[in-house]
Amino acid sequence: MSSNNQSVYQKYNLKTVINTSGRMTILGVSTPREDVVEAVNFGLNHYFEVKDLVNKTGRYIADLLGVEDAVVVSCASAGIAQSVAAMIVQDNAYRLDNLHAHAHDVPSEIVVPKGHNVNFGAPVGTMVQLGGGCVREAGYANECSPAQLAAAITPKTAAILYVKSHHCVQKSMLNVAQAAEVAHAHNLPLIVDAAAEEDLQCYYNMGADLVIYSGAKAIEGPTSGLVIGRKKYVEWVKLQANGIGRAMKVGKEGILGLTQAIASYMTLEKESGQQMVDKMTAFIDNLNTLDGVSAKVVWDSAGRDIARTEITFDHQKLGITTEHIVERLKNGDPAIYFRGYKANEGKIEVDVRSVDAAQLHTVYECIKALF
Image 1 (cartoon, rainbow, N blue to C red):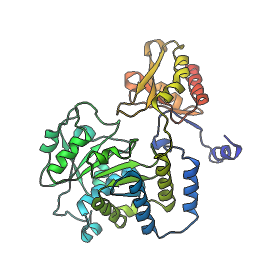
Image 2: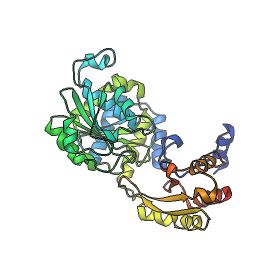
Image 3: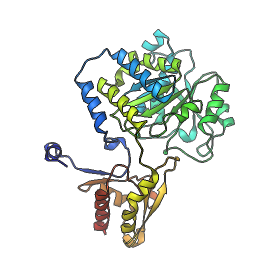
Image 4: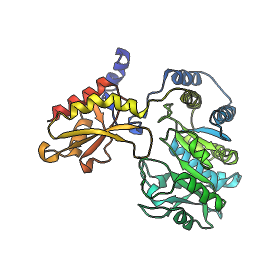
């Protein structure tokens, strides 16, 4: 870390962070490449007709991805809210101005598989409500078939929302193509929240009408979001810039930064799961020398080509719970953040995409020092 960068930590009395939790919002998500930083800087230092910028960068992104249209938004959560609002407001000027002012006699229920109604750092349902909709759950927490999804549709349904995420229940769930088939059989649009997903084309190609991505996660752009899909629906999303989207607008620097990030993302070779395994092998071997600690490779539960280290702690031998281990490392200096979703089972996961070998060794040393 350069002295200039270090001075920022000193100036504001900030802790340094080792991020082994992955592309997480609470840690700033990702660190964009230099070409993205240059595009952001250009955006910061120049003026544009913003509507023209939105339309033409959207057209550029759509051509790159082979989709009908695209628009950059402030983040994936904003993408959900604005997509829901788009399906309720459509191109109605009065509803655009008065979305939350009073009830409207138009469909506003958003059907979501029950196992997809999750909290990703904020509730999915909150984003739906922000867009003027209300969630209607389909199926059960551990099961949703095409028939169960269809059974939840009523004359009040405005759209179906499918959340593709590791946060969601994975077993016994219909896939995106099946959800699209149900939606289109009922003349409804399918919205897919694919915030952290790595494939920017597959869900659109499976039949989704709108697909939402985080710009700062897999794509490693600035804080931003991307909505792609059918032209009519994307145009309705764009209209929300004069509705709820005004409160969640993305700046010119974010638009240009994400557009460049997508262009690079489509051509650059991505780190493979096997490369992640190679990076973590020495780390796993070191952990397995510690009494009461065991480590192994596990793969992403949502099916992405991402390998992680799973560390299991023997509470009896160590005399400390995994929750306490996570808390102590988080409160250390450097602050070390893990994926702690399974801490109640005595397990944590280490995501190695945002760390190097030296940082992994520091993590090992800090775990060793606890015992």
